[in-house]
Image (cartoon, rainbow, N blue to C red; front, side, top):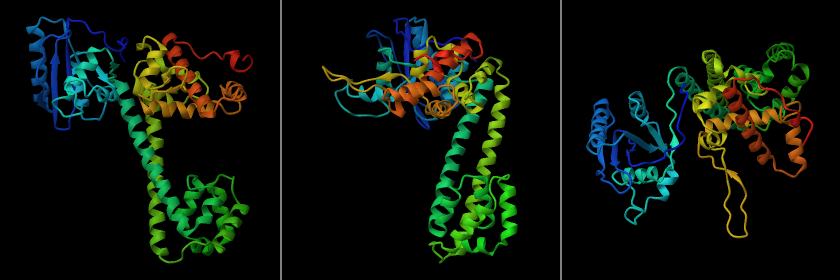
Length: 415
C-alpha cells in the first residue's frame, strides 16, 4: 500500500487542472490553467483504452504548451464507470483527486447563472471546485488491498441479498404460519431454517413424529432447544391463524427462500475466510486485532476502503475521508446540533457502527465510557458516534506506531 498521500490539493499556477465528467460509454474532459489562464472546451472521449490514450495525449499536450510542471485530474466520486480510467491514470502516475458531488451541485449555477446541468458544463464546474482547493484523496488500491476491497464489497452485496431473503421469508410466514416467528424469534437461526426447510407448513410440522422432531431440534440447535420448544411449536401449529388456501405454493416458496438463504450464508462464511487469508499478507495491520471487539470484517473493510491508514497526515483527515468529521449549522445566537457529515465510505461507517455496538456492551472496551456518557444525558446515537470515532482513531494510531493496543484506565475508572 502507498506510504504517502496528499490530503486535498493546493492549487498553484504550475499545474494544469483537468476534470472529467464520468459516463457509462463516454466521458467528458476539460482542462484549465489556474488563475484565469487558458482553458479548453469540454471534449468527449470513449470509455475505451483508445479513448484513455486520446485523453492523456490531449492533456499532456496542453501541459507542454503552457510549460506546466504537472497535470492533476479531478472527478466526482460517484458510480463505478470511472474505475477503469482511474486505474489507467494511476498506473501512469497521474495525480488524482475527487470532488464531493454536493459541491458541484451547489456551484452549478455559477458559470452561467443557470441551473442547467449537462455533460459539457459539468467538467468546468468540477475544475472550479478543484481550483478552490476543495478536493478529497483518491484511494486506488492495488495488490492485496485491491483484493480485500473487492471481497469486502462483494460481501456487502451478499449481505443485502440475505437481508432481502429474510424479509421475503418473514412475509410468507406472516401469511402461512405467523406464530412460528414468535416461537422461534425470527428466521435467522440455524434451527429455524432447518425446521422451515423440512416442515414448511403447520400441517407438515404436526405430521412429524414428536419424539423424532425433538431429537432433530436438539441436534440442530446443539442442545440449546428441545422438548419445550417443540411443544410450543406444535401448540402454535394447532391454533394457527395462517391461511390454508394455496399451501402447496407456499411450501415451494418457503423452501426456496430457505435454500437461497443458506446459499448466501455459506458465501458469507467463505468470504470471511478469504479476508482472513488476505489480511495475513499485510503484516502491518496485525496489530489491529489486539483491539478487543475489532474483528476480521472490520479490519478488512477499513483496509479495503481506506488503504494505508498512516498515509493520512492526521486523524481529522481520516475522519473526513470516511465521513465521520463533525459539523454544525449555527447562525447568530442559535447553535445547531453537531452531526457527522457522512460524506465518505458508508461501508467503513457501518463496520465501525457494528464494532461500536459490540464495544459498549458489558465487559466491552468502551462500556464504562458509554455508561458515563449516558449518565450525562447523551443520546445513544451520539454515544455510538463518539465510540466509532474513538475506534478509528485508535486503529490509526496503532498502525502508524506499529504498537498493539494498551488499555487505558480512563475508560474503566476516571471520567
